[in-house]
Image 1 (cartoon, rainbow, N blue to C red):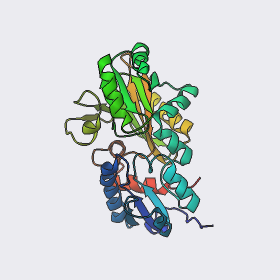
Image 2 (image 1 turned 90 degrees about the horizontal axis):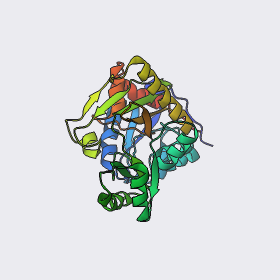
Image 3 (image 1 turned 45 degrees about the horizontal axis):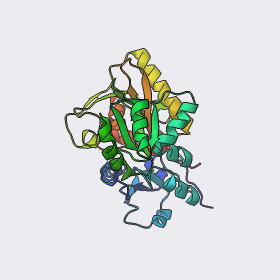
Image 4 (image 1 turned 135 degrees about the horizontal axis):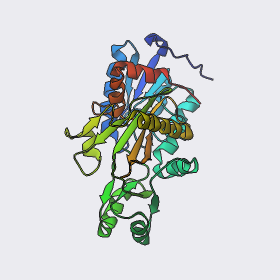
Length: 311
């Protein structure tokens, strides 16, 4: 059995580190951008780190490394499959384990678990046959969101304002996943809470200039506003962070992650989704929240690597 080297804040103690980036999911380009920044930050601090793109190298080659920093997004990187492989070959990796990663990637089953745990989630149904379109409109009302259940970065997501838009929204989402989810639209504000180790960082309020926080608003546009610290009172801030911790723990999350929220018109917060491998680009939210409490990007990356584990 492979001996697992202990981690530590001293860069040489991490051994040879693979920064997993790229991959073959729909989020490949974002992964490459974030992974390159992570790699540079590790190298600046003396970590013996190397890029590793599973789309271009055989995954078995990772056996030559002592530790893995996962900067892959979407399927085959964030969904538990890669985590399971690393467990088998006994290489410690950043982020959540197999089960939490799989649940976090699956918005439908994640919300089933959260609902069973008594946590607030938006109403939603799975879409299939055409009669589900009519049911979605009756049960959820318009506007509503249609999305692939197992994609990230708002890929394949549509804001549906009237019944005749349902078929095209479903067709778009089903290009990315056979599991398609319709959810009630909530428009009282979008917030996110980053988690690093045992710490919940300050919440961020996201104000997109587009109709919702879509792919362009996340990565391409410069007119998306981020409020960090957000506009919440101290009491509401503490409540949101507490719910984020509880939601992450319910999934079995570890190391680091991000929990996204939507609020309704009364200000009640609902859990939108979990991110077990959040983005690390220059537009990304975890580094932004870290800066608010004077944690530099380099220090943040090293803290995440320190949390690398098995099991």
